[in-house]
Length: 586
Image 1: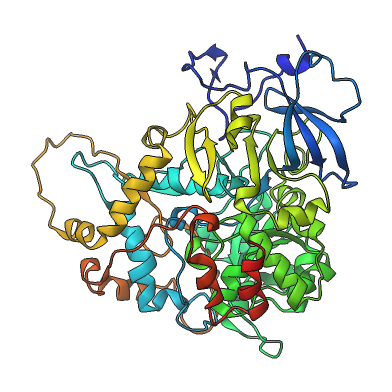
Image 2: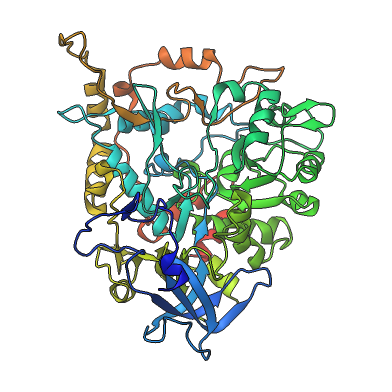
């Protein structure tokens, strides 16, 4: 027995649960288990993203128990134990799986807000626009709260299945989770196929904090104390908005300045990652760099809403580590593959080609893993790392530009923890799973979604079912809202009867869960959008049934959304080279 076979492999959000306390679990026929499954070998061009940025033109990736055993040139002898393993020819280029550091997944069934009605200055403005409740928060409240005849959430399972598949079809193997809250005050995350940075179930992958207890979000010193206790990354929405060079006191920037606990003492360290950071001035990036902080860049969402984005050129010069995130579908890319294209266009046309293709690919692989403190386990294709990878068409030319310019139909395979989860039928068959057939841009693909530790409300839902259910719900939004508004019939129950736990989505600015999803430290100035007056305005608003209209379920890919690129081209706040150039990259 090899050392890999003797090793205990912690469960991850991407692994089937086959061991618990040493006991074996009987597995369903056809399920894939990296603990007991066969060794695997994939052949193709391999972009390792290691410290030397090694690219192996003709190589083989050897995988056992969900772990990469070796990445070798094709002519080298196979590692011990792989002598009889026939490599699967991918006929493509193999990259580490894409790691997304910012995405409000629960909103990713909603279509693009098109056109964005005005140029906003900061994050406190657009949630107050009438369109926001009609197109974004209202539909999501219905999705989160609607129940079936038995009182169970009717739309959460389909929603989770849909948005997770949306990640897979864009090559994403890690993203942020969907938060749930219950009427008992308990909180949990859905665990699924794609890795969840906030719930990993793996001691080698420290869980990032994307939500912070209210008490820690209201005081900079308390926040600093919390930050010092953490071993993992803390992802904090930071300075969403714009700040002119002569505008040192913008509302967006004040949220950054609130992190200063005392002169030259900041609630920032190497575990801190500021999402957006669009309102930061050059001197602010110096503060971040001196204390080891990072940022998460979401260029399309920033450009759509604010007509500008983070000063990533300044961040790069200061030495600030940068990750990438697509934010959400109402004002962002459909997936991380699309966000890479926007970042490339912005770099080429607004920053004079500041970032090379390799640097941008690093933002969604090795740099993202480093921000999460996961670099020992993910982000590169090295021996000992988790077998998360994505394969795209072609094996010639610059591999980094090839990934940035790849279409969704160019993705040949997505593997998470050594399990083939999505890809071309031939490759999926070669690795065992049959799965569900779908078409992407007219091309046949397969999804393998079986996952024994998945939430039972999600595990039973196919992508086909999820799409059918959500399409109908989105067509019937006014009707569903009216049903939610009906007075609930009260039934007498025994005094000692337990109150059933009902799960619902914890949605931004929609309900109070005691957890800040967009934490804001206080500052002196105009009211913050998270204040009680904002809640009072919402409470006094018209019933949802009177303002909601049927909406379209956002297609899973750009390849299957005929109007997406045309809508981007009409967005008034996006610079012309981006809004016009994006179509050329598809």
